[in-house]
Image: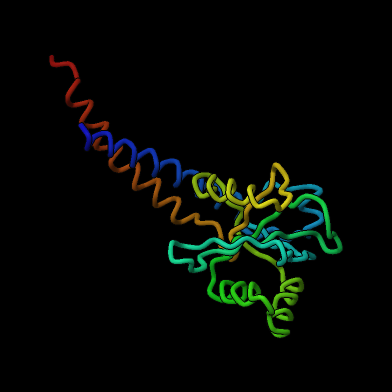
Length: 196
C-alpha cells in the first residue's frame, strides 16, 4: 500500500513539475528584455527576463549559509536606476562562485577598493534569469527574506540569475509521469473490469 501511495505522489509531482515547466518553456521561447522601471510599473506575463537599467542594492543583500556558515546563495535587491528608496519589487538570487566570493569580500569590515569597484560594476550589467514559479518558488526563501527588513513589496519576485526555461526537462517529466500512470490505470482496469 505504501508503494502505491508513493507511486501516486511521484506521478503527481512529475505531472505538476513537468507541466508547469513545459508551460513556462512554451510561453517563454525568447528572453524578454525590459528595464527595471518598466517591470515594476507594468509587470509582463513573462518569467525569462533580461532586466536593464537596474541598480544593485549591495548594502541590503541577504546571505544564505549552510550549517558550517559557508555561503550558499546571495539575495540582492534590484531597483530601477536612480531609485534609492521605496519598496523592493525584484530580488536576484545568485549561487555562482564569483558572486559568493564577491559577497564574502564585500561583507568584510573594510572591503578593498577593488571589491567595491567590482560590486558597482554590476549596475552596468543586464540581469538575466528566470523568475521563480511553482514548486521552485520556495516559501522558506520568501519568508526568510521578508524577516530581514528589506522593505519587500507584497508581490516581490525572486529571479534565479542565469537560469533559463526548462522546456525539455518539463516534457521529459511529463512523459515520466505518464508511463507509470498508464501502467497504474491498466492494472486498475484489469482488476476491476467486469467478467463476462
